Length: 117
Image (cartoon, rainbow, N blue to C red):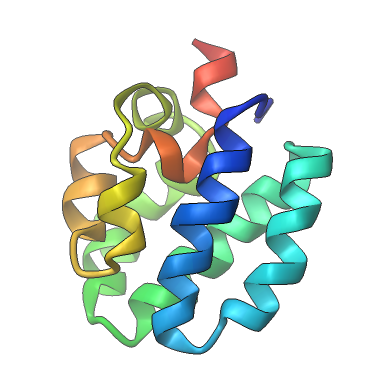
């Protein structure tokens, strides 16, 4: 889960926006900054918070959590691809999260796969 530059964009644009619509922006704000600094553990936590909380109200959580995409996004596996596409935009839309996490293009979202790859 090593995040370098992607974490900044994702945490400032993706996570923030996703939570912004869910009202979790406050929690994300604190977690996002931590992710930027640590870019490792907090990234995972932040990713899980964003996907779980943000998608929780979008019904996308079912696809992410049910399909195991959430794991790849906040953990690894998909993180690699996710962090190589730039689907961070999709993630910030909450509604496009399913594509982002399902297509593994959630690069911006996870931001950790970039370094791993």
